[in-house]
Amino acid sequence: MKVGFAQFNPKFDAIEENLSRVEKLLENVSSDVIVLPEMFATGYLFPDADYARKLAEPTGDGQIFYAMVRWAKKYDCLIVGGFPEIHNQKLYNSSIAVQPDGKWHLYRKIHLFDREKLIFQPGNIDYEPFEFRGAKLGMLICFDWIFPESYRVLMLKGTQIILHPSNLVLPYCQKASFARAVENRMFIILTNRTGSEKLDEITLQFTGGSIIYSPRGEILAKASENEETVKVVDINPAEADDKNVTPRNNVMTDRRPEYYRYLIEKK
Ligand code: ACM
Image 1 (cartoon, protein in one colour):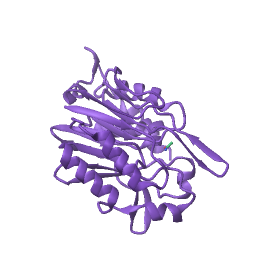
Image 2 (cartoon, rainbow, N blue to C red):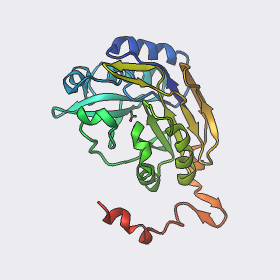
Image 3 (cartoon, rainbow, N blue to C red):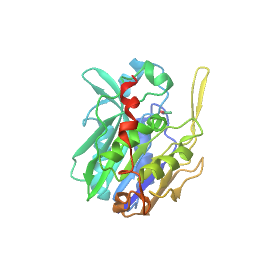
Image 4 (cartoon, protein in one colour):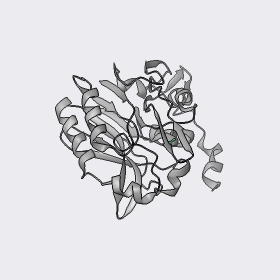
C-alpha cells in the first residue's frame, strides 16, 4: 500500500486559493492514502468563534469536502485532512478521510490546544479505526500527540496506521511520534504545515517536518521545516500486526492492565 503526506503553507481565510494549491501539489500523485495538514483549507489562527463559524462547513457538505471527494476520485486515493466542522450549531476541529467512492470517516479532535479552547468543542467521537483497502486506519489531530492514551486505544482496537493531520507549533511531536510508533508497533503518518500566522500580538510559527514512521521507528519519509512537498512510500500495513519486540516480548500481550487501574480510577 502506498501512503504519503502533503506538506504546505496554507493561507488564512483563503479557502479557494488553498484548495487550488493542494490541487497543484497533488498533480500526478500516485498513492492509496494522502494525509493533508490540520485546517489545511482555512488556516488555523481564528480570531474568535464567530470568524471560525464563517469558515466552517457542515459534516460531509461544503466546498472543502467536495474538493476532497474530487481528489479522492481523481487519484483513486483516500484523502485525509482537517477542517472546521459545524454540527448542531457547535464547532469542532475535525478531520475527515474521504474514499474514492465518496464514503467518509470523521474524527473530532479530542484534546484541544491553547486558544482552540476558546473556539471549538472538544471532540465527542470515540477513537475508532476504519478499514480501507485491507488496512486498519485511525485518526488523530495535532495536540492529541501529547496523550499517549490516544494512540494506545487505537492500537488496542487493531489500528495499523495512524493518520495525523497537524499544525504543530511546539518542537516535540515529530520526535515523540518515534516513541508512539515503537511502543505501539504502528505506522504513523504525521502531516504538519509550514509557514506562520499572525493575529494581533500572537505569532505562530509552524514547524513543518512531516514524517512517516514504521512500527520499528524507522523514518520512511521526512520533509524539511519549510518545504512544500508530497512524499509517498510503499508499506505493508500487516507489519503493524507483529507486536513482538523480542521473541519473548509483545507490546500487546505483555501488558498488565491490572496494574494500570489507576489510569481509569484517576479522573
Ligand atoms: C495544535 O494542536 N494545532 C498544536
